Amino acid sequence: MGDAGTPTEINIVLLDDDRPTLKTWHDTLSWAKNYTIHPMDASSQVVDFFKQGRRVDLLIADISLPGMDGPTLVSYLHDSHRRDLPVIYLTNHNPELARKGKSISTKFPVFNKNTVAADPTEFFLAIEELLRDGSNAAA
Image (cartoon, rainbow, N blue to C red; front, side):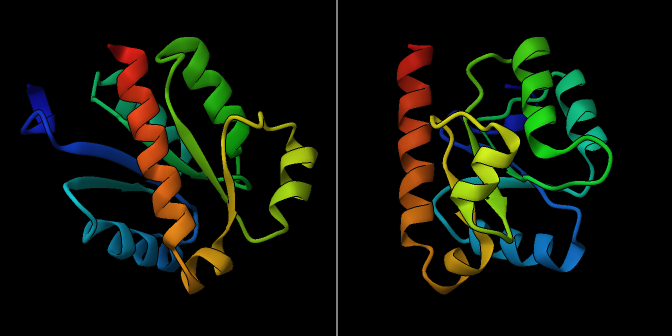
């Protein structure tokens, strides 16, 4: 099974260029279920991860990143590596304004980081839904 471990293990790539934020998100996600979190602080790290053939069940990415931003990275990954990769975007701004400003598909949820920090319930429900939908698409 390669680096993924057990078949029930869920591999989530978490991308944010702010290291303290990345640590907070990593800690928040790590306790949940059987998620294995792969924290990264640059889009280039995510690209390299995919080029190594590593299994990724979900990408959680900040919209605004230096260099290649979140939506550009996702477009690249969908075109080059995995068209059905589920994605959740994070932003420090109004999610709907961020979605419109970056032309993000409505099939991918966008969450405000501060809102999720205060109450992560909807965020975790979105993760479960995307993972469920992704496993159905792969079947």
